[in-house]
Length: 190
Image (tube, rainbow, N blue to C red; front, side, top):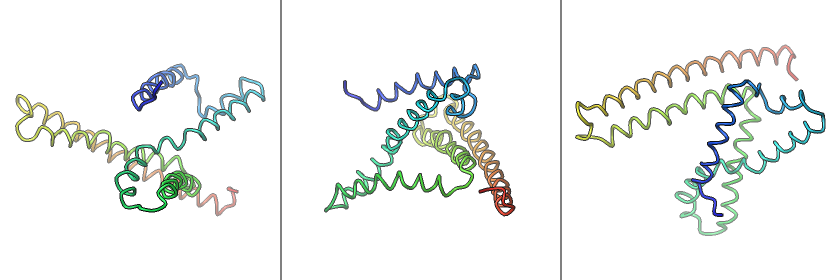
């Protein structure tokens, strides 16, 4: 069987449905590794945590396939003439190491991840509306320019969500870092 991006994407749908099922019936509370020890023996909990860690270890680099493909095949590979395999591995490893360095270096990672999620609204809501406006320009907006008005409405809603989400995340980061540094100065953190 040949695995393609389409077949990998098809595997994501059942995973999403299972997670929605767990969320809907409140089976999954918080971190999965915290949920296991409450209802099973100590050995099963260690096995599940080990398997969970192994899955993350084996699949973490897969998430970088698209950025790697863009960085390597469009920009780096045409310029590299010697040691291509070595430089290819360096590019791949640097992408993984940068994320680990950010995870270690940022004290309140959850707040920064929420900021990234808020900014993702720009890519998932605002940019498609702008691209749709550009695609239908100048004379394919439909009767009474319905596609233009739809895209403008989506654009306005997306910008409102983007601004509100980004401002609230930045405020939470500011106060969270103040509390973190105050606790650290008071000796409450290790």
